[in-house]
Image (cartoon, rainbow, N blue to C red):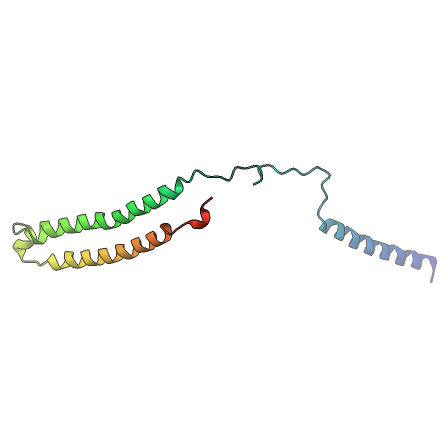
Length: 133
């Protein structure tokens, strides 16, 4: 081989290896020279709580479960009383029987509210023994 061919081959090989080295250097994350500090770690925070949520959350769930029953029942019983049981209402004068509709709706509402309330009470009123200090 001539000197020019060997120089060309060595130059090509050095450019290939330097290209591979530059790729591997580019893929590696840069090392920071700064000192690392952690702020707000769990070791410095006070993890104790006042325990108010153990009273407030179950109380809210009980009130919400009661509201699931009371609000629709008040509306449906009012509709039952004013339309079907009142003989002077327009529906009674026309002879349209709506009493069975309000009664069926009351039964369905109570069943759905009972399922929802049972689930909520089961979830939020269980014994939280593993949270006690």
